[in-house]
Image 1: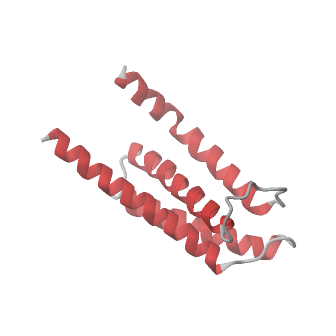
Image 2: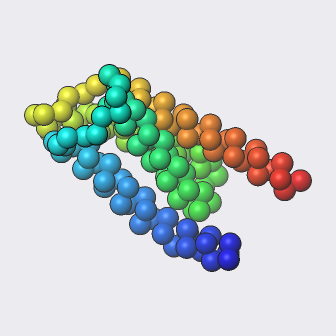
Length: 130
């Protein structure tokens, strides 16, 4: 059962990365309608944090399956750079979005949160195996 699940994850890792990247890019560059409110004054930053934490997990999973030497470093750097590029594109190719340094910060914090989860999860797995 677990073997079949791992094979399915491997099989779908690249399509998941592609679809998530496209969805995040489109959502970041088009004018969105009514976004549900979370009831705080910084809902946008929360959405950025969550989106980039999930993006980090998705990209990490794919990098790990490719057996990169340092998948967590490659993931962290690439996702943060992607977030910066998206913010720059919002400022240059759209008229309804602007570059926001706090969005970049929220993105980076989401990445850091996911990295902490990955590190903590890895340590728990190592303890269980011993």
